[in-house]
Image 1 (cartoon, rainbow, N blue to C red):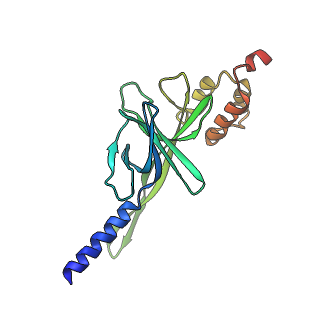
Image 2: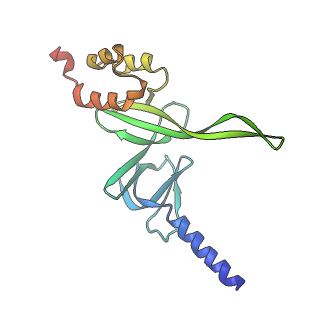
Image 3: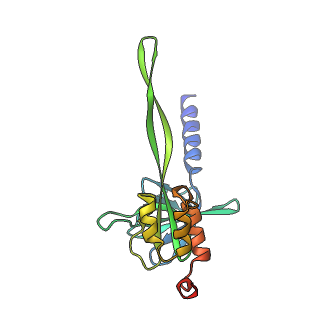
Length: 197
């Protein structure tokens, strides 16, 4: 009986572990790709060709990123370099065009104070999500953190689009609108804008 319970445990454990992997395509630096199942953990890509396979670990030295697909939508993640002397981080691609927008998300924990119960002090931690947005033009080597010191950096970064600068100055575009700013840039700010004005 004990053996049957152990075998059932192993079966259910393997089943739940294999379900963590979603349909995905791994994208390599040489522009090739392979379809299979993947997941992202700790800035590394874990990938396998079939659900039953054991996953292999991939990093930025060989892979460009991972494209999840299925259920009628897709999510793309790429390794992005944002500082010269650091390794790239894997980030979600939010928008691609003349300007690419990346989102880096990480969990943060906040202490929400202490309560006393039965003479014991307990602290309450809440989990939140911190999002940082990076932007990068096709000809740039490093992505720019546009969330940090938003007003100052955005006026420099988007200086080639007067329409965006005006909207930032009027308060129509703020730090909370970063995705919309990049969509606007790709749709309405092109290389010929200076020649038209």
